[in-house]
Length: 131
Image (cartoon, rainbow, N blue to C red; front, side, top):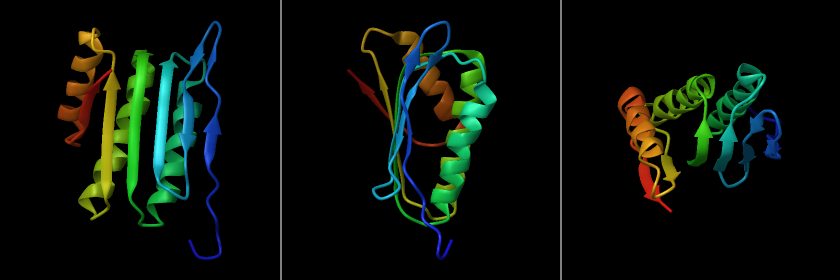
């Protein structure tokens, strides 16, 4: 990764027929945010760009603080989210410092249960934070 810099990844959230979550991945601090609703037309392309950015960031061997705050996501988005969680878990297994936070509406038991399933599937510890 020498002589190469990693830029922040910023995607503005959009809502119309499809919903694109807002993304802010900070290359300097390692703080990553994914929030809003995820119901996309091109789910694979969207999540591929997120995982590609994370793979490049992981090469820097710096801490990651990943914050999920999704109020809704469809099944194909769940696969993209799991890909991110698996990547974070692999980095953690390899000695990387990872903090993962899952923010969920206090009155949304389904969102909370989805987070529990993600934890079970990925084996990544996540802080579950009601708001």
